[in-house]
View 1 (cartoon, rainbow, N blue to C red):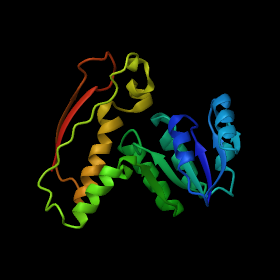
View 2: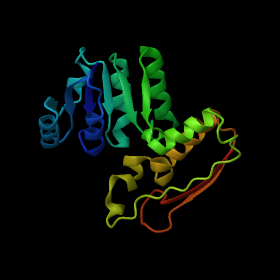
View 3: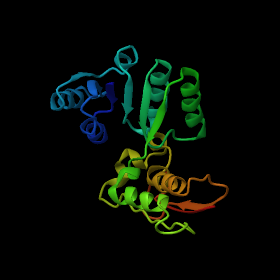
View 4: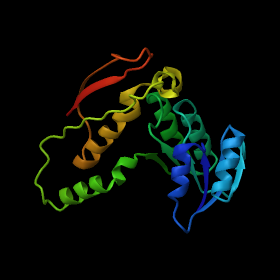
Amino acid sequence: MNVAIVGAGLIGKKRAASLKKNDRLLIVCDINEIIAKKSAHEFSTNYTDNVKDIINNSSIDIVIISVINKYAAQITTDMLLSGKSVLCEKPLGRNVKESQAILSAAEKSGKIVKTGFNHRFHPAIIKAKELLEQQAIGTILNIRSRYGHGGRPGMEQEWRCSKELCGGGELLDQGVHIIDLCRWFTAGEIAQVYGKTYTSFWKIDVEDNAFFSLE
């Protein structure tokens, strides 16, 4: 499969390194040409700083989107409508409207869109899933999870703490992993949600704490 990566930062490079041997990384794209060029050199491929070069390239089969949340939905939609399947890093949109636009584009184009829920591939998580499927540890009665992230100095200046750029705080950024794993482990859909978010430490316009119960 011919692959392109949009967003050549930390996550984009990790995805490039994880490609299978029979996949071919044709090109990487980043709005920062220096980063794009450096990443292309690292993976011995081509680069561009214009996402339209990816959209207009009909030889590309799959695009991995690893840009900040504000731009991910539009780029994902454009790629799908140009005839490419997409792996988009979580979350799949900053809100329901963006998510629905992506799903509509996938349905219209007949292409596949997946979300980058990488926690499913942690060895311990894989083993837990295997034990559940083998009925080796009984039936799940409840799942309790705690996730912490973002205590480093200067965190409040990062894009993750901007409502416009990220769309939300800790719930949208990391809580989605917990929600995904709950659905994956139980093979069920969520019927009710009880929750509360608030900002208790950083002076930011998104939440830095989130608590929720799923049924």
